[in-house]
Amino acid sequence: MLKDLKEFALKGNVVDMAVGIIIGAAFTTVVKTLVDEVVMPPLGLLTGRMDFSDKFLMLRAGTSSPPYRTLAEAKSAGAVLIGYGALVNAVLSFVIVALLLFFIVRWMNRLRRPDTPPPPSTKACPYCKSTIDLTASRCPQCTSQLGEGATA
Image 1: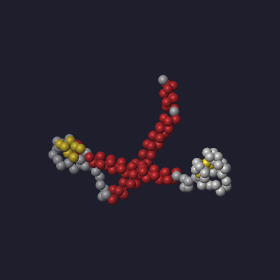
Image 2: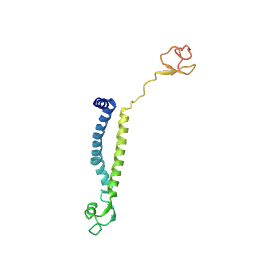
Image 3: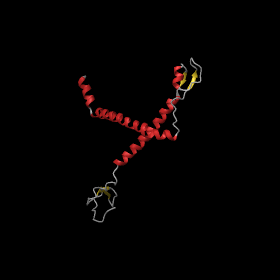
Image 4: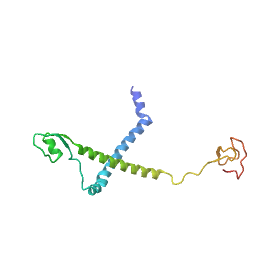
């Protein structure tokens, strides 16, 4: 059983997956810092420092009488609440992170893409139109002799 576990753990796919998860966790930290420290401050200025974290819907009042100004005050009074503000903040944060990741991955893919496509290595036979090597002197399909000017 120990041998089977060792075989499973040392297979290439499991090790690759573990490395991917570790890199993903580190990348998540970088993206979260980017969102919290670079994107959110200007966005907060544009939206008038809008913060939904204290938004709630009271289902039943607590021991002290309402109104409660903050979510913490309502919770400490024992009120039964639906704290929808935290969900709104989480959804907004998710959307911003998803958009940033989309643009980062798109930018990285553009960096990896070759600037020019590789030159063609095949051509069409002028007689049977099958694909042949550029340097072929005879078509392997129709056995036609290809001359110097016989390019399609």
